Image (cartoon, rainbow, N blue to C red):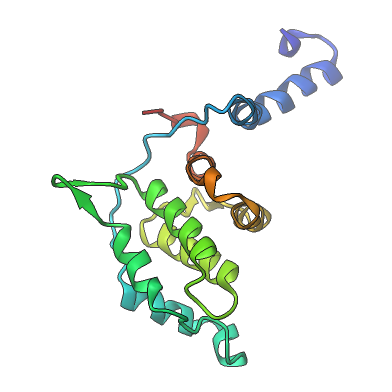
Length: 183
């Protein structure tokens, strides 16, 4: 109704609200405790533990610090392998977005590195999305820099009981709203 206004200011406000509507709906879903799980895309690339560690070691922080990206307890191998676990012949994490969200969450929360778990988690998250061809769309990033920092900090500050909600939120952030499908 606002967009039909002859007043440019009112019509412009409608356009802005329309652009933010998916985020407002997601905030409402979060507020009601009903964050939907999007369908997501089928993974095209498999992240291996070796690839993940080579990537971490290629980051400039790695050579500048004796702690950055140094494995603490060997759990990073289990985190990466866990992305592809199955039950009854079915993958537990079915979409690229679900795998990426779990990778981000688990590296942040499980602290597999001596230092910089949030930076390692965010970097691996981006590396995984890029490997699966879902990081960019028409030369625009799916996850902007500030959004990446916000998602990572949101997970770091969350309570363990909020795990499913945090993962569902990240999955929703990774879905282009024009083609979003909910399971």
